[in-house]
Length: 139
Image 1 (spheres, rainbow, N blue to C red):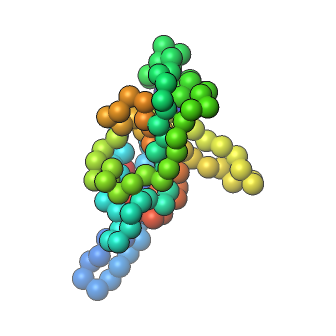
Image 2: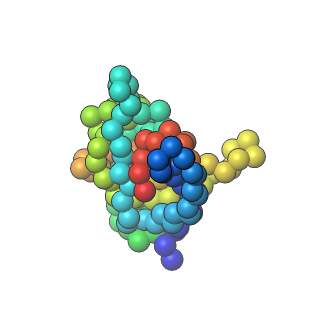
């Protein structure tokens, strides 16, 4: 069974001088794509996304490509992982969702997407709600 996360996206279309707000529910699922927008002018990195790089391969046989189950555990089970904020040079591209996770922290639900990059030992960690709020991703 595919893991699906529902997000509320806020759209602000401009019609003449009037501005209206629309809320739409968006269903994200493993295997679909998220566009990482370009950075805001003058920024060197994104505020809601990190990039993680391993130095050693992980066991992809333990990852269910349909549901994303196992990706979090397999990818992050190594101590030799480098992490940094996602640099702006990685913006303006679409990335495939490898896994969707929800965490409870301080009474709030945090929704996260793990995105595959062109590099097999690298993943992008996206804080979905924060990324939408900041306009760093498009669904």
